[in-house]
Length: 386
Image (cartoon, rainbow, N blue to C red; front, side, top):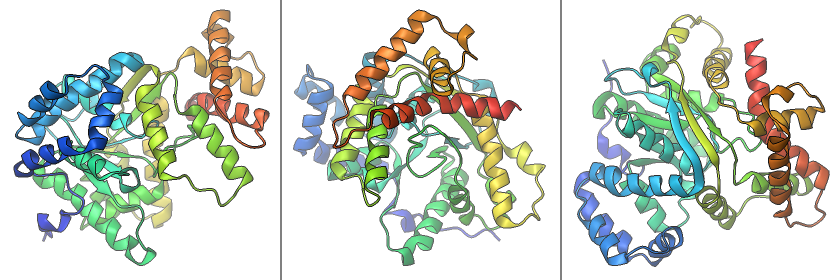
């Protein structure tokens, strides 16, 4: 018999309910940090008109489909050359699903996916967001109005299992009872070198909320991989910088201020062309797996199914081909770019590296890490075809 978890058990991680929206909007408007953030992103905003429009929203759906949609599209217009999606024919019809994608940008991966899904009529998803990013109370309030649920990161070891089980139960509950799709990244945190792979730990967490065997539990989530391709990653130099800091200081840990800088940079700076590809749902492939495999072996096999779909559906830009040839000292992809493309990327690379100001700056190391970020998706795609 199916175990039904009372919805109140999710109160500390769930999005806001519709009857909580009005009070939350008033609280958000009163937060100085929120107003500063809005003025930073929209310097010419009419604050009175802006807040009046916010207060007209009575439900999460109204808030997301009007205010949030416009905010995300404004960011896209100012910081991308294009924002596109393909693979819509692969979406399960009238069936909520679990979107699992590679992870490039802290905020915009899920935000962009949501507006693109909304445009093609799929509806908006609930989004998993780590509590390490909820640096200020108003940020937590904003993401909960936007239908995000909280992934608790900083919990004592003795509570990790309980926390993961509650999160998994919430995801299963949302698909089964609320009938909403969810989005979660394939790993905890971004793949800073763009070497994307699905962590077994994520799949183990997703399994916990089911009551059957691993394959049955994950099949019930209707997993649909999504391949995210950014032409330029505005946080690339910050990621390269973090690589050197961790190399030189093994005890280095990013501060909340660093997280905020990464969020701001990712949102506000140029990303070039951005494309999302809906890959094939994995349920047919899961049915072909041997459920009697050893558990870790089975999780690895499931992760490989998801990864293959993501690798197969990346979209590549001249910078990916140039970076690959520069990193591996080849001319393998010379037909995929011209001299102008190479000059543009080399200039971009130089400008980004020049932003890094740290002690004992290792130019060669930093440059290599940057080239890996742009070539690893292509490398994985090529190896996936073999």
